[in-house]
Length: 401
Image 1: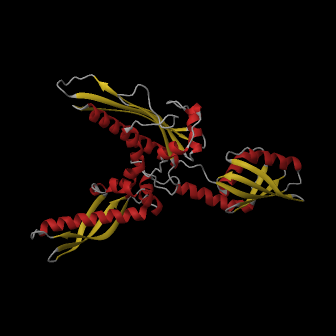
Image 2: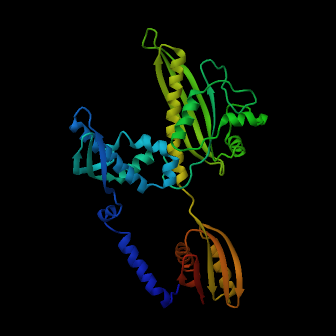
Image 3: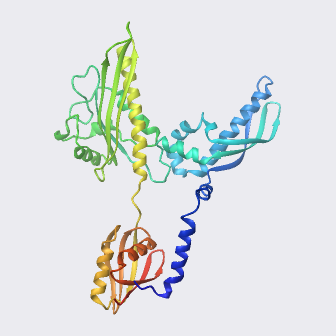
């Protein structure tokens, strides 16, 4: 492939850039990750019964919480903080020491009633991100999917599993499903109210069964405007008593899978078990089901978040101005090469001139990435000269073979 002088300088710069940036030593790369942030904050502690030492300790604790607050607000999108406010509070407060790498008191002042301190604190960004992410909270701006739960339930007294989407009225209370739903709500997942659907929707008889296949679950989800359906079953059972006396054991199990309604693909599965003991059968069963529902909700939430964060690469409309199209055979070969590049969705000829064509493409990537792909895919096939790459445009010259 021939390359004109127009591309020599940019090419040399790109080679130099990648040789310098991409093979940086690990130490240099780690420094660029900014693992901590240092902030100066103030805290207050109430002096009770003249105990200044305890008030000072409380003031320092208060300032460290404020330090984590400030870094959190700066670090995460406001929309995500608002959407997951309850979850953020549960994750962060009560374990502030996990995020504080070190601190020092810069100034302090005890008044009659309060003890005030000014503290310089270093907050670990890496630890903060890891804990929030492992808790199944979506940190980006993309909203979490609307969830529809299609999990059947069989308590000890139930002869067959019960389910809310059937044609008969659903009366049995499901502690496991309630716990699963509530756990996912704390993670920021918008849940669709099953009761409202059951009261206002006539369900087709083909769905009147406890075990739905993927297609049936997706169809019910789409009719309720859900983006993800959770399908599965929950059950309670008695466990042989090995303790003796009046204490009895109960097992709760939940098996479920999460399916995207737009693609029908399975993105998460869980199988959870919990065993409790109690002298009362009702209380023991309720505790086992509630615990296993919470475990299933935690597991599904983190897995769905991980799958939801893997966003499809952004699609861009790019313009390609091609010179040297007078050689029809060469131009047709060029068009076939473009169409076969991964990420290429659509190609249309916008304008044809003597020896020049303007092509519009829908490409999953940037103009620079398309230029790189063209260089790789045309090598040894046809000769091209890419002499201009901008944000949404390429200018290419087809060279004689």
